[in-house]
Length: 468
Image (cartoon, rainbow, N blue to C red):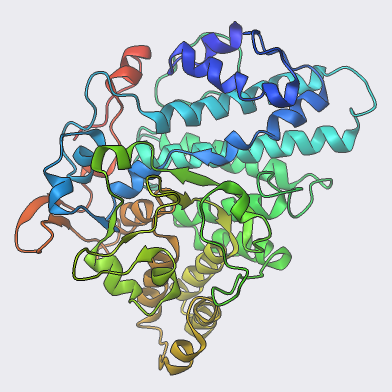
């Protein structure tokens, strides 16, 4: 099958799984291995597959400073989560599968199938200019999301002086052929992401939000443009695209409301007005390795504080018998919100305002978000004075409170902030008592980047490894 061959970096079985994931929408016989979508309706039904919103980015959060292992977890049998947590030189054993890489490129392949073939779709009642253009725009937004995640996971933070020489990830823009491309530069990947998103928002038929949380609309594309430009350090364009998002969608979910739901599955996002594009990540065997969920790091707990509803609703409070730990979905699985949402866009706008000296406006955005995240009593008791000197620190702390365990966003922030002398930091892993250093990660280290697994490199020898 041509499409299966095109997925050069994953095993054939994974490619087959990806297409069979669509069969409930395409009504393909379970015995068929040749999924062959041809009509605009077929392509729309590919986008209806909720697997597109189920991601595997938890490894990126394990590498950040937002979580902590217990002493028991540290002494567990070695596994890729533990090795990544300790920033070891070797993360992957020879047989380990990098599900983040494999599953993300599998989804990119599905978007490429749509984009390759939709212009040849036969004329029928569903093949209208509006339907066709919306399918194209949604495929472009999805592809841009996946590539922005990949380039920040496996590539360095965007640096305008080196972006077009720094290695990013392979760019695969078609489902045809059997090429083994090397890594494109970080700059090339960003150019693709921005080009895809700009093409999508230029579609007059694309609504602000999709028909449900798994379908992207114009607001999610604007939000991803704001994120991409923030990562590039272009605070003018990041601010402009944040404005474009907030002009359409700016409603927050008050965590004091009975409408708040603990996240255990994708449908829990339905009805949440903050969600612009729903994405979740499950922990993928972390619990089976450790027989426990993760613990919040001391620095995250100190930044959040236990009075913040983002703490009390997402962590089980400590007791004399056990430390605080992340609230699992069903006892042995952790589910994390990786969505594109209004709060992140507000914080992008706030950071851009803070960096240009507009501290009052930035402070107002922070206060609006915090009002929805704190009890009325806690919020009313806050006594803050925002100034030009302290506002950026307040904004960055709020990003950490809002976006922990969010598909690598904290790790990406650490990488980009390490480019700034006043904001860079070295990280350390300590034992639970905090009196023994287990590992260190200097600012700017190559160990901030996810290494490519042995299986990925074997499948495509043109990919160069990240130095550790």
